Amino acid sequence: MNILSKEQVKRLHSLLLEKTGGLDGVRDEAMLDSALANPFQTFDGVELYPSTAAKIARMAFSLVCNHPFIDGNKRIGTYVMLVLLEINHIEVDFSDAEIVRIGLSLADGGMDDKQLLDLILTHFEDK
Image (cartoon, rainbow, N blue to C red; front, top):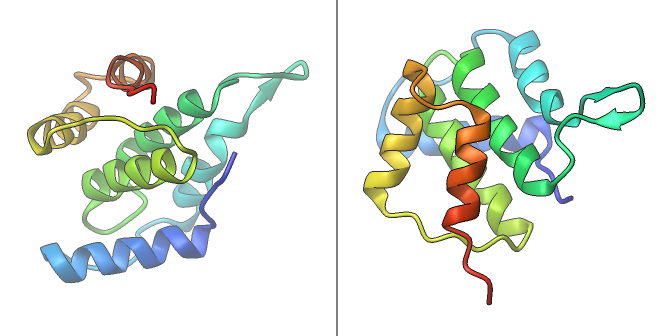
């Protein structure tokens, strides 16, 4: 799986806020570390999120829900999801409205990572 480093995520966050507004900066480094490591957890030697798409869904969920940044957590969570899908050759077709709904639903508890994974898989374009 192609991943983004912590520094790359922080840079994407800064660039995103330059374009869309908001306060830049990390609120909690430990929560950012946790969000980035969470998809790679194992239990008794078995990956908890075995597929690339499952890892991406879990990372988006964790970035939104851990609130590691001062501002823009929903935006960076959904943006990282889209970037990771792209660099891992998982082509999805989401409308702008669906991306907004994903971010809002993750933040308000209306969607968890499993539901996000299902949504990713239903929008997967097999080419």
